[in-house]
Image (cartoon, rainbow, N blue to C red; front, side, top):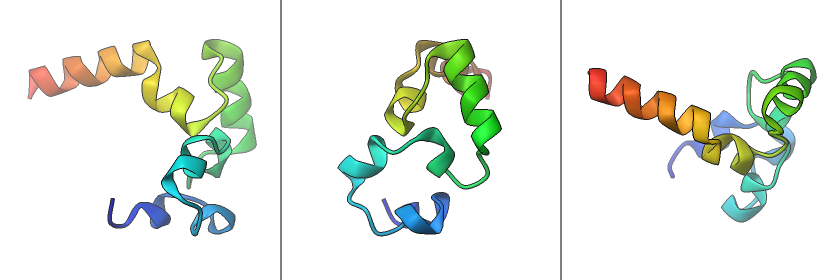
Amino acid sequence: MAGIASKFDKAYETLPIEELAQAPVAALEGVSESDAEHLAAAFNIKTVADLGTNKFFLWAQAVAKLAE
């Protein structure tokens, strides 16, 4: 996963991938604490893994890929 460190805030850049998956969503570059609060309230998304495995996001991604 080359370049994955640049997708996270500095405090998380050196963590192993397993720890990045369990990091809070706000650890992702560009995701604010407010954004994270909205994701938690709307979809119960609290970690990067939650975001990456959320069924609604996966469905939307599949539709977007199929539409290409």
